[in-house]
Structure formats: C-alpha cells, structure tokens
Length: 215
Image (cartoon, rainbow, N blue to C red; front, side, top):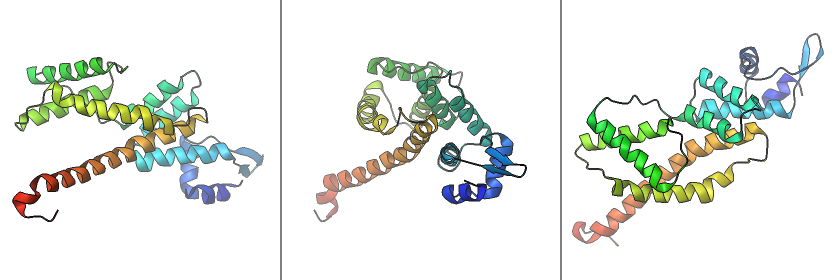
C-alpha cells in the first residue's frame, strides 16, 4: 500500500507517519521507485503500537523508542520485552532516606515474597507502592501488611486468570506489547471505576436505614 493508504488504514496523518520514519520508529517501506515506497501489514502493526504507547500510555518519544528497540531485539524474550513497556508505563518514584520509607519498602518486599511473585528487585512498582504506603501513613491511615493482603490476592487472581490471557503471546511482538499497554492502562481504569461503583453500593447498603435512603 502507498503511504496515503497506510494513513487511511491506521488513522495516522501522513506528516506524522513521515516523522516516525525520520525518527526510526517506523521501518522504511519497500522502495519501488526513486520517489515511491510501499508499506504492508508490519507497518500497520507498528503504527498501532506507536499509537497505543503515545495515546493510551502517554509515553514520550524517548520511551517509545526504547520499547520499539526491545520489540526489534529478537535476543530479548517476550517477558523482557513486555517488562520494558511495563516499566516505561510506571511513574518514577525517588526513594526516601527515612525509616518510614524503609519500613514501607520492607512491607512491599514481604508482600511480594508471601505471594510468591517473581518481581525484579528493581521493579519500579515496588517503590511506587512503598511511596503510597508512606503517603497513607502521613495522612494518619495506618497501613499494615494484613491490609494489603486482600488487594494482592484479588488482583493476583484477576491478572492470572483473566488479564494475561488477553495478550497474544504467539503473535507478532508488536501485538503483544500493544495488548499489554492497553490492558495495563485501560483495564486499570476499569478496575478503579468498578471499585468505586462497588463502594457506592456498599455505602448505600450499610447506611440506607440511618440516612433514610430507599432500599
């Protein structure tokens, strides 16, 4: 297909496609003449991936380039490739040199150990969760390991039994990354919204009589 057809097929404007080509994010097409190249299904998949990383993941071009390099590096296994995208989606958290931070991080590490999860010691999620615990405690919310266990159990089952099955591990590497990014970001929002709906329902159930609400 010509670049105009590639643009039509993906919804990506031609100037943007040319920018991705110049930046090396999109491989060049097959040159059929001095002024014309043609593109195929791999280019469509790559543009879908870039859009997922940019529009859903909100990643900067530098992070997108790192993910695409992982996709193109066949020496990296699928787990390592997915990890590159997963870590790119994680906010950067600077550890604090305080006893309360060290205690929170130790709690996170113990939770991971209890669950038997295989999580890299440098995984940014460890520090992100530790920072959340510290923030809760500074707001006088006493968080203990037993408070975290129900969340870990519920989410662990959801990821194991449902989320990971949505990733096409046996397909093109771009497709696996795209599904992983969309699932991580958008189904993360689904989880948060459904939890808030459940909280509203439970509040109504518990307080209906006291507040005179209809049952």
